[in-house]
Structures are given as structure tokens and as C-alpha cells.
Length: 183
Length: 405
Image (cartoon, rainbow over all chains, first blue to last red; front, side):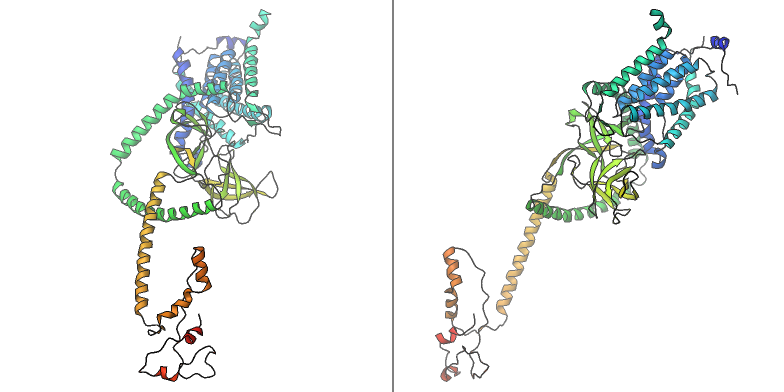
């Protein structure tokens, strides 16, 4: 296992992942469409107890993927904000709850991407688990303490969501790597 | 100054984006004055526009996926998977026969109920018209229990209209766009509806919890509430019509926040996670829908025929009664009826133009041939000659006077 915190020389050698423009548009779009469609579709196929635990956040994974790959905090911030706002627009909650959470995640993802080897599967797994928990925590803090909304917190569900997100990322990220432009 | 922004541009962008979103959030929440704030009932124009744009982007591909899935499902069920159609068809025919009989009985009960409600000046709202709609997408967030349907303002839908399925209550319309609508499901944490327990008639408020389960809150501890009891809409919230099935009681547990209160967890009547088609109730009226009214008319006609048959039966029984022997003296003079016509009751009826109930005719006593001490004082004893078999009995005023009326 190669978990390496990179020094200044190593950081310079880090490759900034580049993708065709269409990938920057299509992948986030597909993520928000699937995020909106899949839970209901799974609800039709899975038994009720299982569909209750079919928790995942594809826009978060796409935000983390591009933030880690591009290693640009500004782009990560904007990508995260856009994905979060889009998600909020699909719910009936105030627009900005997911926006703030994913803005922070995008920024942190890009900042961390500069320091660690983001192609390592274990690091990806751990980062996705951590970012998922962080996004849920920010969502809860903003909703309950900033806005004063009466939203219950399901710790176990959020933990399950983080684990599932990490698992999906382990499969999804190598697939997305195929769209990378090789120089 | 320029170098500051260049050097810290990442931080500046982050702060700016966060600040804009925080300010935006503040405008979307209503301060209720209590400890917790609540969502605004209706989105502002700008928020609504953002939601509309998101729907415009996400909606069409979702509808396409949904249509293709439906197409495949249709092809499969109509052409590929026809194994059990015949037996299912027979079962359905039996069910229809049974339901028709039940419907006739229920219509009678409903008609009676409506008359009683009219007597009590209580106006009952009945579902008058509905719009069927396809469900094609959801919010995608586990905290937000909303889904999207393919009908909108163009189909006459408006916010707060109730959404139901064949099994029971589903939710209400929250945001209505031109051709699509957002439905807030009853198991969301922010939804609410007035409900009543079917047998115990205890009222409560229906809410969703964080796990997406239905709960009835605001109930005092009551031993009568048992698992299995049905819960219906109470109709007091002015959104859901009264009497729609909501679910059945699954468990009763003490309210962790309030002493002596309980929380009743329900199993929803409608399959909230597996909805494909729903009905939006666009109108409720204090009368029956045309089909039900027509059925009731048929029922009334049938009742009329039944009444005619009963009248015929009564006539037949009267004829039979006339033919049967009785206590009436066949030789009694017809003049006996005249004093009855001159009674005060008869006179009053004639004057007022009203009818009084007819006094049943008293049995006519045959004159006593040999009176003794038990004979009524008023009863006249006919003269010896009049009792002679060869002579006809003469109408004696004294004889009629003493008869009991």
C-alpha cells in the first residue's frame, strides 16, 4: 500500500488530470439525473427494508473525483457549489444546504489532491468515506443551527451512506479514469 | 491589492461562494418566533425559477428513461408474460361481481349518511374529479421525500391539491410547474395531515420521521390503540378529503419528547416507494360524483319497485282479511257507523282539513239474550220478541248508545 504524503518535489511531479470538455458537462449531468431517478427505481425493485438503505450521493462522488483529479481549489469550489445547488433545486428544502456542503468538499478535495496520491484506491476509499461524512455533518449543521430547521439526524444512515459512497467510488473512479486525456 | 487577490484567490472564491449561499438561504426560511424555524409555504419567484431550470434539465431525460422502462414493461407484460392471464381474468370477474354487490349496499349506506349529515347541517366533501399522473423522478435526497409527476398547471393542477393512489393517501402538490409538479409525500418530516383512528375515533397529526416512516403524533396515551387498527384522513386539514386510508397501526411507543403522549407508527396503505401512477384530486364537492349519483338513482328505482311489490302484498292481505270470518255481526245495521262520523274528532278533521288517524272499529257485541250481574251496565237487553229467530232485529238507539267505541 502506497499512502504517501508528497513533498514539494513530488507535488511538482503530480499529474493534473485533463478531460475532454464534454466529460465535464456530461458526467455531472448524468450524476444528477441518476441521483434523482435511481432511488425511485431501486425502490421499485428492492424490498422495502433494503430500499430504505439504498443511500448514495453520486453528485458528491463526481465533485470529489474532479476536485482530486484537477487539483484546483477554485474549480473544485465551483464544481461543488454547482452540483450542490442542482441537488437542492430538486428537493423541497432551501437551495444552498447541499450547495454549502459540497462547496466545502470540493475545495478541500482539491486542496488535499495537491498533497496525496489520489490514484491510490485505498486513499480514494478513505477520502470518499471522510468527505461523505463531512458533507452530511455540514448539511446538518447548516440546517439545524444556521437555519433552525427541525431536521432529525440519523447517524447510522449517514454512516451507511458514507460506506456505500466509498464502495461506489472504488468502482466508479477507475471507470471515469478511462475518460482522462493521456499526454 | 491585486497581489492579495491573486495570492488568496482560492480562499476568496470559497468565501464569496459560501457567503452568497448563506445569504440566499436566509431568505428562504421563515422565522416562526419559536425555537425552530420552518420552510416557507411557497417558494419565492427566484427560488422557483431555479427549481424550474433544474427540472428543465433533469426532467426530460428522466421522463425518457421512465417511458422506455414503461415501454419495455408494457411489452413484457402484454406480449411476453401472459402465463397467468386467464386465471387472473377469472379471479377479476369474480371480484367485480362481489364488488358490485358491495357497492349497492354501500351506496345505500352512503345515501343514508348523506341525509343524516344534511340533518346535522354537516357538509361532507367527496372526491369529485381527479387527474391521473405518472411518477417519473424523485428528489434524490434521502432527507427530502418528494417526487415528480408528469402533470402540471396546464392540466389544472394547483399547489396543495391532494395526491392519492388506489391504496390510499400519497401526499400533496408542493410546487406546480407548467407541465410537471413536485409532490411532497406524507412520510416527509415537513409534511402533516389530520388523521383519525377508525375504531377508537381518536384524532392526531400525521407526520414522517427521519427514517421515512409514518407517525401519528399528538396523542395522549390510550390503552385502546392497538396494532392493526386502520387510520384514515380526518378531513380537518382542508387538504385531504375525509375517510381516505392512510395506513394501519404498526406499533405504539411513548413520545420521547413529551410525557403522557404516545407516538403511533404506521404501515402506509399506499406503497410510497413503489408508485408509478397517482391520482391528483382536483376537485372535491359536497355531493356525489355523476356515476355514483346515477347508481343511486338506479338504487332508488329498485327501491320504488320494491315498495310497489309491498303495496300489492298489502292489498292481497286486505282482501284475504275481508274474506276471513270475524267478530263483526253480519246482520248489524249500517246506521252504526253514523255516530262515529259525528264524533268530535271527525268534525275537527273536517273543519281543519287535516286528517286524524282512523280509530280502529270496535268489535260489535252480539246482544245479550240473558243478562246477569256480569253484563255491562250499558248493554241493553233486547226485548224478548226481538230475540225470536223468526223476526229481524230492529235497530234500537239504546242498543247502539251503550256499545263501547
